[in-house]
Image (cartoon, rainbow, N blue to C red; front, side, top):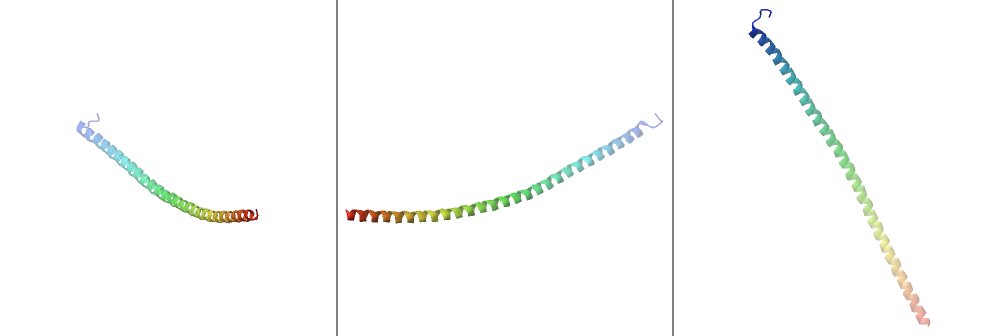
Length: 104
């Protein structure tokens, strides 16, 4: 076919195949490296976002704990006041009962 020996044509086509295989390998390598870099970057962004979420959660938990402590203090004070009022009422009833039984 054109007077070229078969070996020369075969070498020519084999070199074309080699070039295309290397080009394909480079493209696949580039895509793989790009994908890995994108995943690494996404992982870093998610870690930063997760750290922010954890900080906000810890802050909210701290506020909740402070509110609960304040509620416990208020409840304790109310219980003390109620106990004092009950004691005063009991003494008043005892006085009233003593004065009414003394007058009978």
